[in-house]
Image 1 (cartoon, rainbow, N blue to C red):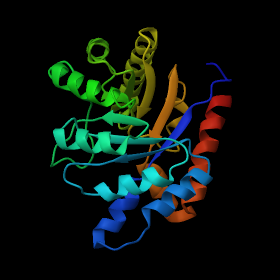
Image 2 (cartoon, rainbow, N blue to C red; image 1 turned 120 degrees about the horizontal axis):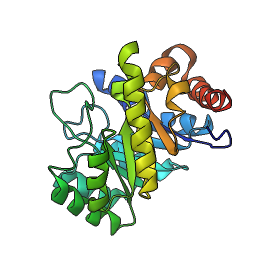
Image 3 (spheres, one colour; image 1 turned 135 degrees about the vertical axis):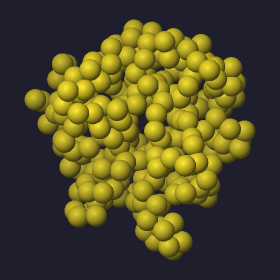
Length: 246
């Protein structure tokens, strides 16, 4: 592995809003969380504006747009409502993800092959506003081929299956991620990754080649309950550097 390679840390703050929405209080203050996260060394802020608004609210992303000093990555479904919001918001990135109302969190990658025309139309609209589009996908070569046809220039590889895999399955799931990253990079796509990444598996995740950015949320917010948000972000940055030096 190239030890000089620096991977960006995008911090997903959805679950700060989850705590707030549990009681519909004004706290914890999401904008304060944005500021603390950036001051602690995050390279970007990620927020998922879900159709059901279970955590992040529409006003949150517009308030964040005013204060984010790094980059703002809006995760969203490719619906007419979300595309309209994104065009008004003009985030640095949009990551298109699948959504199901009953899911606890995003449970898998986009079915790009079955929805290629719809996704390509969404990408075209967003690209017209100079918003870079990433597609959240399974690490699969055929899916990457479909991504190329949509006009998206980034992929975010779903690392969730690796994160929950047994010891016997882990080697296979990791190889899928490695092969997909290599193929995507070869085809000129920027390679990001996310889902289920924590302070323990980061050392292995970090070995996936060609990674530009890791988007990590749940484990950082969970750690913040014990050490504070700034320390939790700092610890993840340190873990990423340590993994790079290993």
